[in-house]
Each structure stands twice: as structure tokens, then as C-alpha cells.
Image 1 (cartoon, helix red, strand yellow):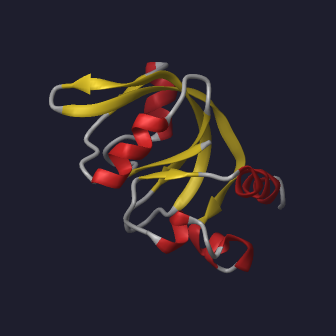
Image 2 (cartoon, helix red, strand yellow):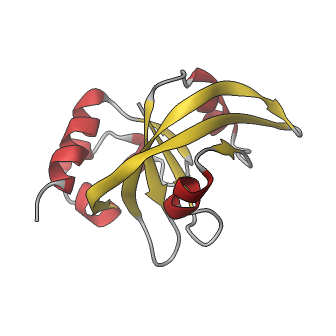
Length: 130
């Protein structure tokens, strides 16, 4: 399971829903690229909106094609699964010690982040709370 970050002004979850699938490109950080190379077809991915106004997990997508080289980038393809019941903000995540060791918290600039099953389940649970 994974988390992919994007600025919604560049590419939002709504854009992914409208297109039906997308090539996830533009990742330059070595660690993030290595994470993309580990992604497997069918794995679930949190879709994270980042930027000044947004820092929240908004939806779930899935890997529809594993990594390959495309225009000098390592890319994967993703397809939409659905929006969370409500977004889970980075502020909420950081305020919960449960997530203290997660790369999302510890390496805030990393754009492709692995997600342990326990973190995944907790985020889903949080998204269902009012």
C-alpha cells in the first residue's frame, strides 16, 4: 500500500476520476522513484492533496500498471477507486502518536510513501469519523 502526493492545482483526484486512469510522472527524488519501482499492480494507494491550502488524504486509487520508463521518468499508472468519506488531514495524522514513525510524518517532502497496513486501516477508520 502506498501514498502519492500531488498539488490539486496540478492534478487532483477529480482529474483522475474524469480521465479514468493516469500516468504518474514527474517524480525526481531518488527514494520516491525507488518506491515507485516497488509498486505492484492492484495495490491500493492513498491519493494525497498537498500544497499551501491542502494537506490531506482525499481518496483511494490503485496501481493499474507497474513502473516503466516514460520520457526520462520512472512512472506507474493509477486508476480511481473512490473518495474517502471525509479527507484526513496531515494535522490530524501528526497529532496522533500512532503515526510518529510513518515516512509521511518523518520525511514530509517525500512524494511516494509506503503505507503499513496498520496505518492504512487507521486512516480509513479516521475517514469514517465525523
